[in-house]
Length: 594
Figure (cartoon, rainbow, N blue to C red):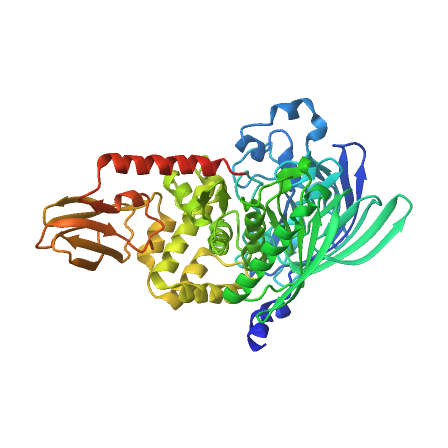
C-alpha cells in the first residue's frame, strides 16, 4: 500500500493552473450540419516568472477549412470536400472577456510555425495591462464550433458525433514567459495545461452521450437531455454521442492496481468482440501497474467507433480512448487488442507525464510504442492466419528496416521529411528503447522508466529530463541514445568478410557505441565468444573460420540489416537470396494489415 500512495502522490497533490466551466449544446441541423454552441469560463493564472501581455488560444477545428496548414500538409482539400462545403469544419470565438473587459476587438489570428496567413488554428488576445506573476484572470468565451464530416480524429458520422479538440483552449505558458501554442499540423498532436473540467452538455435524448469525465447528473425532458460531467487533473475534455451505443461495464484490480471501472461503448454489430477489448485493457492495466506504477484514475472509457467514423479510431484522450474493430474480424488478427493496448498506454505518457507532443512527439508515441510491443509480445502471435505468423516486435522491425530516416527522432513533428514521421517517432524510438532494454536487462530498464514516470507525473518533462533520469539508473549510455535520437539515419553491423583464419567486422551508418556480442566457430570445433566495440575489427583466430555470428542473442533491434550478421562457409548465395525474398514478402504482407 505504501508504494501505491507513493505513486499516487503527484495526483493527490497537484494543483492545476487552469479550470474550465462550460455549458454547450449539440445542434443537429442535417447529417453534416452539426454545431456545438456554448460558453466557457476559464480561471487562468500567470505561473511564469515574468509579466504576460497576450494569451494565445488553439482553435483546432479551423484545420478543417480551406487554406489551413493542416489541409496543405495533406496535399490540399480532398476533392469531394470542394463540392460539399457542409463537410468543412470551423471554430469561431463570438465574444471574449477578461475580468469583465470585452477584448473581442483585440482578437487576431497568428501563424507562429509557418506564416500561412490562411491558417486560423491559433488566435490571440492582447490584455489591457500585463498580468503579473501570480495574477489570476477570469476569461469568458462564447464560441461556435462546426464539426466537419469525420476527418482526422473528430467530426460527424451517421448518427455518431465525436467531439474532440472542439473548444478555444489557451496555450501552455512556460516559466520564462514563452508560449507553446502551435498551429494544428498533419503530424504531431496536442499539449495543454492540467485542469479541472466541469462541462454541461445539452443533446438530443435519443443519443447515448459519454465523455472523459465522471457523469455527475443526467436529466431528460422530451426530445432533449442534459448531462453534467466533471474531471480533475486532466489536460483535455472530449465527448461522444451515438444513437446505437451499447454500454458494457467491467472492473479490474490487482495487488498493485486499485480498482478501475472499465466502460466500453460498443457498436451492436461489434458486440461479439467485446471480450477482445476487455481482455486487452486488463492485460495493459496489469502490465503497466507492475512495471511502471498504478493507473492513477478511477475509470477508463473505451469507444468503439461507428463504421462511418473509423477516422476517429485509434486515439487517446485523458481517461478515454477510441479502439477500432471490423465486423467478422478474425481472431487470428489481434488488431483490436493492439489498438486498445496502444491507446491505453498513452494514459501514462500523453495523459499523466504529458510532454509537448508537437515538439518532442517521441516521448509519448515512441515510449508508448515500446510498451505496446512488449505487451503484445506476451501473446504468442500478433498475426496468425492459415499458418502464417508474426509477432508485434517483428512487424516493427520490418518497418524500421525498410524506412527512410532523413531527420533525427528529436525533430518538431511538422518538420519531418514527408512520410517519415511515424517511422522516426514510433518505430525507430521503440526499437532503440528495446535495444537499450535488452542490453541492460529488463528489470533494470523498467525500473528506470518507472522512476521517470514517478518523477515527472503531471509536470510536462522534456527529452533532457528523460535521458538524465534514466541514466541515473542505468549509467552512461550516451553512445546509444545520442546518435539514435539526435542524428538522422540508421546503424548496421555486418560481417564484412572472412578470409581463411581472419574475420573483418564493420559498423556502417550511425556511430552507435554499444557492446556487440560476437561468436566465431573455427574448423576444429572451438567457439570463440567476445565483445566488439568500435567502428571495425580485424581478428585472426589461428584456425580456419567456418561460422560467424554478430549479436547471436538478438539484442540489437536497431540493426538495419540483421541478414548480414551471419556468415557460414556452408551457406550458399541462392539460399541467402531466398531468405531475403521471404523477408520482403513478409514485409509487404504485414503492410496490408488494417
